[in-house]
Length: 115
Image (cartoon, rainbow, N blue to C red):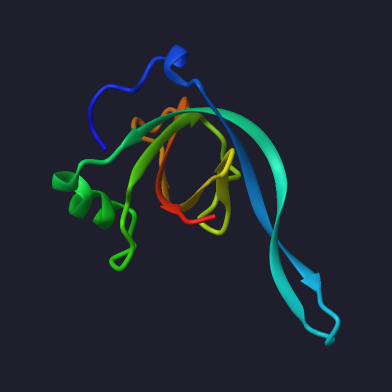
């Protein structure tokens, strides 16, 4: 995840950050659902097939396929259990990184999932 960071103006995609919640079901158990947490602005960059193996290693998810990179303003409360929603598109978070260690930009490696 090297290279220049997209400028703030490139963060045009409005995303909904969703967090998992346990919802009681009728049988006494629970099921996992997602609740809205925050709206964020991000730059969405597709990951080329040539760099997917490198990105997959960085995401520490050997079986997952990184499909996009999201760049947004720094937040310290985003984890791999959460997901992003952009309209009908869902993005599962595979890993996060602070590229320069200065807490200015957060880069999320994500996999687009079927809704």
